[in-house]
Image (cartoon, rainbow, N blue to C red; front, side, top):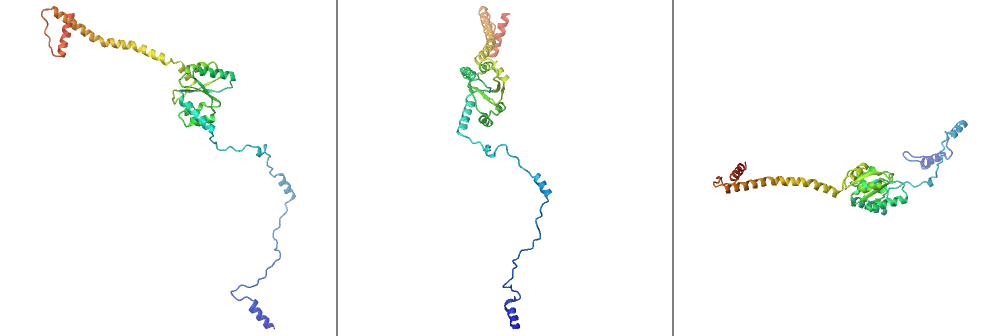
Amino acid sequence: MAAAVAGLLRGGLLPQAGRLPALQTVRYGSKAVTHHHRVMHFQRQKLMAVTEYIPPTPAVNPTCLPSPPGPPQETVLIRLLCREIAAVFQDNRMIAICQSVALSVEDKLLMRHQLRKHKILMKVFHNQVLKPFLEDSKYQNLLPLFVGHNMLLVSEEPKVKEMVRILRTVPFLLLLGGCINDVDGILSRQGFINYSSLPSLPLAQGELVGGLTPLMAQTHSLLQHQPLKLTTLLDQYIRQQRKSSSPVPVPTNGIPHMLALLKAADSCAH
């Protein structure tokens, strides 16, 4: 009996060399706990509670704040204003920049009417639209003048004298500068005043013609003096030769003949 059990165990239950056992015993009991969570000391708990970070409450609810600004989008209105600005700078020879002030409606209408009588127009554009146009154009030098609220005074012809005279009636409307005749340089306020003191084009042309007329007359008289003197001497020589019975023989070949005539006429005159 014992031998049979031993043979059964040896043949069926005991694993042979090089083979895994068909049955393995698994322990389902709880594992041994080697680490327990240590309770924090009550004084440390109090210290941690006192030093705990409490974030400040925002003054404004985040849902009430405006959304962050996105990239600027070019709308139809901005494109229309850009075309209008380009036409203003292209069609006008005089562009003056003034510092816009809080004028009353009556004063603004009166000044606009006075300027329009001399074909000077008043234009107002926002710097948000005006500055990008100036950065990409030949009028980059005008950018430092556009600070705050500005006003443009433009005209097809440089009516500087009329504009300065009208602006003197509004002393608190400051003229900053501008450009004339489509030049790259900037004219300051004093530059506009100096330009307005210049004579008009017809007057300058008249003064130029008046100054050139005496010079032209003097040049004409100088050019006519020698031929007239030569003609007078030759006429006198011919008359004297007709009166005398024996004419003085002179050579008859070109320039020597003319020189001989002049010498003979000069000797007869003396």
